[in-house]
Amino acid sequence: MAQLEGRSGDRLAQAREVIRIEAEAIARLEGLLDQRFDAAVDLILACDGQVVVTGMGKAGLIGQKISATLASTGTPSFFLHPADALHGDLGRLRPGDVVLALSNSGETAEVNAVLPVARKIGAKVIAMTGRTDSRLGRLADQVLDIGRVEEACPMKLAPTASTSAMLALGDALAMVVLAERGFDKADYALFHPAGSLGRRLMTVEEVMRKGEELPLVPRGVKVIEVLKVMSTTPGRPGAALVTDATGALAGIFTDGDLRRLLEQDGAAALERPIDEFTASQPKVLSPDQLAEDAHRLLREHKKDQAPVVDAEGRVVGLIDVQDLLDIGL
Image (cartoon, rainbow, N blue to C red):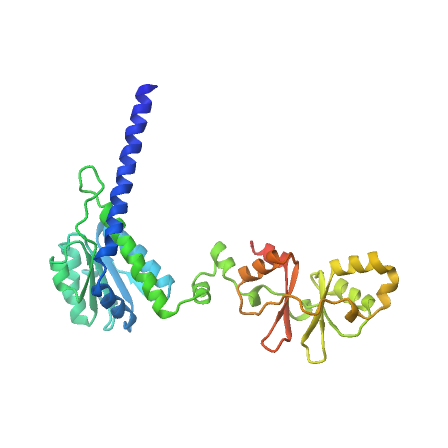
């Protein structure tokens, strides 16, 4: 047992050392950021084509992730494997593209062979490397320095800390470009329509009830008429929306309002005008808000429904808590 515990302790110590080395490699990047980073951002923002990311081996895998992050946050990008590029796929490059080339040593032959041709085509080159004076650094228009990184591998050979640094620097590049473009949640939602993330980023307009599913009643009608509308509207909404002659929201009447009304005044209340019992200033949503905003509003105010109105206050929809549950919120 003692031997097993000792072995486990050695493993944990080694794991912590790996994490420490990689964390330090990332932390050092902060001090390496300078005007070259600014210049790289400017190159990407001015790019008329796509950001073409390339790299071999583990650096190439990191490059694929950086390219995917750029593409999903508003910067058109694809990954080009250097070997494929040298066997015909350089034809995918266009004047105005920016090539982001990754190599810790800066001497990766396949990567460096791509760049002179890329420049002839009319692409700009950004290098991400730990050797700024390498051939890669000399071939580039701008260089992003990851520093002289000590790998976390016991042999100091396997790409570990260097690839962690590349990934972090690539994320920094993508996030700064995102912010400069003014890329927001609505833009992000456009590129992420599926999965839990896509559901969170759906708009209220995509989820709300509208058309014949809207339980609309005019001001002045009796409560009994409102109940008929609520019971015959498709989807059986738990509320009715009271509107004025212009279609603007005048109030909301819910199942809860009905229960309280009957408990207080009995059946005689059914013959009274709905205007006496509606909440005249309900919490409302706009169609372009996110579904998660609707979920937050209903949760914070302990409501089951919220009217959706346009800029003039006219009713265009209704959000019911069940609609949000149906999409997984």
